[in-house]
Length: 292
Image (tube, rainbow, N blue to C red; front, side):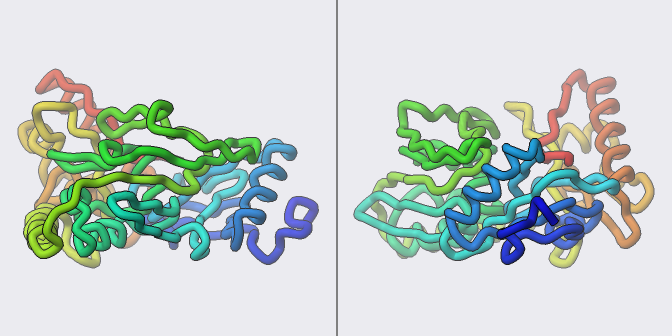
């Protein structure tokens, strides 16, 4: 209990990570932390650094795959309200890293802040979205980001302005341990028009995703100029399966886990897709999911 001493209110041992990821499989976290304050988070990170324990952040769980053996060290989940606060001042929005991206998208539309409506249907939290520069085919979150507050792996808090930030396709320079909050700046537009556009984009996005109730995730980055989904289809892999994991019929860049699926099923199917697409089409697909 030495590691937990004084942190028992927000850290516990042996948490099943299958309950916190979209695929619903994977082993246990050695320590599971849900800090209730910035002070809690700082204490957890500093103690982990001092003890040599690895720390990982888990947001919405849509882009994380956990191996069946589980994860050593500490998995931090920013579920407390203090990490999800949102404030609006004119055309600027300040958002906590734990806030749901879907909530931010709908709030921007209702306030007449243009741009974020193009990201409707993308899962996860703001911190994760910024880390991977989440986006659609026409926009990404980085283009509106003007600053961020982060925490390093030693527990130091650092403020980064626009000059410090770099965004590229599904990647960013925000690679510190925690994105505590971020500031965005938008153009003004008609709230009703933005809401209608958001709703239309949502309908199109949902038609290309697995049905509600399926345990699934989007696997590969689009390599530029062509979608990963179309490449997988062209390689004749739509509907392919290994064990209890199959390539989605509605969108070949999604893989669907059925009851009894294991992480090894998914990893083997990912390897099959990468090798087949490379051999047949000469394209090396890069996973966008994190494998723990």
